[in-house]
Amino acid sequence: MKVKGYLGVFLMLALQFVGLLFLYFLLRLGFYALNKDLFAEVDMPRLLPMLAGGVRFDIVALLYLNILYILWWVVPLPFKFKPGCQRFAKYLFVVTNAIGVALNLIDMAYYPFTLKRTTATVVEQFKHETNYGQLLGDFLIEYWFLLIVFVGLIYALLRLVTFFKVVKPALGWKFYAAHTVGMLAVTFLFIGGVRGGWAHSTRPITLSNAGDYVQSPEEMSIVLNTPFAIMKTLEAVYLREVHYYTPQELHSRYPVIHVPQDSIPFRKLNVVFLIMESFGKENIGFYNKDINGGTYKGYTPFLDSLIAEAYTFRRSYANGRKSIDALPSVISSIPSIGEPFVLSVYSGNKTTSIAKLLGDAGYETAFFHGAPNGSMGFSAYTQLAGIQHYFGKDEYGNDDHFDGIWGIWDEPFMQFMARKLDTFQEPFFASFFSLSSHHPFKVPEKYKGKFPKGPLPLHEPTGYSDYALRQFFDKAANSPWYKNTLFVICADHSSQSYLPEYQTLPNQFAIPIIFYYPGGNLHGLSDKLIQQIDIMPTVLNYLGYDKPYFSFGFDAFNTAQENFLVNNIGGSFNFYRGDYFMTYDGEKPTSLFNLRKDKGVKENLLDQDKAMQDTLVSYMRAFIQQYNYRMIHNELVAE
Image (cartoon, rainbow, N blue to C red; front, side):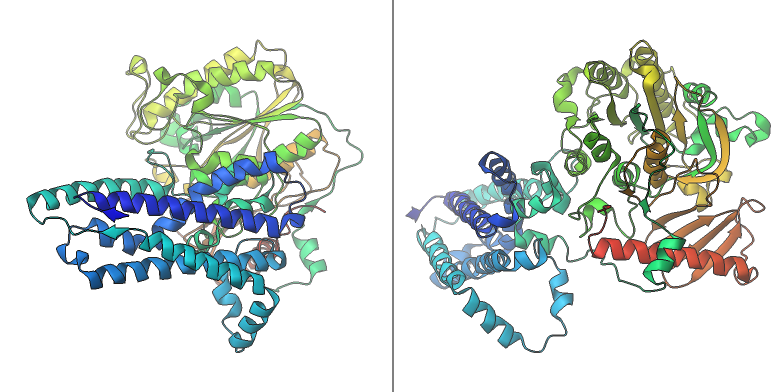
């Protein structure tokens, strides 16, 4: 086929790309067929969405693999039409795509040994091997048929690239103008393709996004392709196994399998989590009555009034500083260490969640987030967490209430949630994630001037989201399920700070965590430490959940147990236990403060209080050993 005209090469690129997508479709089918016995639950109706979803990941992999080939043809350079240059382009196309084909074929055979797509860890895994030739020879002998398939696919690549004969166009201003326009269009498409979309709220697509198309983590390998898995983990954080304690000592110091109390019956209350964007503790007047001589009011009058009727904590913290850290922490009791869990190489591990546990006990489960479906990777995470229903901007179905950037304003979306909950069969679990108190910190036009602006742009939309909470509770209070519901309100993370009291390292993670049960006697203010990963075990134990489960957190209502808190930023640990706060670089403590006596963290007690330092280090090491071992060995459930 002759490729003519100023834009002929762009048509050629499009047709070749479609051909590559079809080839990857065949590779995915082959991967499934060769490993079908390992996907016993996957029938054709369940497979079809995986095949369709896999196209997103194939697009990313193929764009990266062919970036030099694409640049060769879209940049307006006249010499590329010379016969020698065209031959170079063809070799480039075949070689780069042959690498992608080979990686996918190898994983067809390698998957039964690893039960996941190969990632960049393969380099670390085999770096000390000296018998590469023997290993390769044994592989080719045992899987000789894949070698035949590889040769056939290389021939297909050759046909795909030699089918087109590029005819040199007339060089002049028309050529350069047409190529420049085409190059800009390809650049736009390339950016959207490798990110997984063009929406403002879309995060670059990663391994965990495969969860959108599957019902269990192991099925993600069908959706993914091997080049994508390797490229997305080249700069990933890999945990190192450590051995500070024997298994018995470790379980005694830091147990992560929670055993139910037989004396407490399972009360199947409804459970509703309300995760509020950027609702740092600083912004809530209830917790700051001593600030500015008692005159500080905060920006959440409704939440202040609700806390007075609820159970909360003076010392409560987030496990991360990003929204993407919050969901695994709150719903699955898994903190992010080094990088967000859902973006890590361990995101495909088999996990549990409070939604899955309650769902297995007969609860209807749902997640509400007013952003476009797929935003922040939330839909993929909730699918893997076993949540049955997802309600986002698509399900809301009314763009009149779209804020123009992130999604549906909190007030109308929370009213939508309240109406949906009225249709659920009890008992149910639901989680909501707000979005209006987010940069660029706007409020709906009709509410401008209604809420205090404060010294930070965040304060006005915080007041609006607090108002949205009030409207939600006003509506929910009239529903028959309301008094049989345990509400948990927390922030995803803290945000900008204005008050000096919150500009310290420990308080940069300070958030509210509130338990509200309108039909029960759950009231009080506790001095016990609590973090986001403690929410799941605290709720399950309060309900009297009757089966063992896995959790990195503690029961915050258990007065007999002294717990500890961990958060991580930039690879450095922040560790809280008792009155003390310690920073830890992964090997040794780097600072130690008594927060009871030194709220401003001015007096570093490192090496002054050696006994307390050693105690904190012992628990810090127990956490690292449990966390790393469980992640590396995929042991995040109670068997």
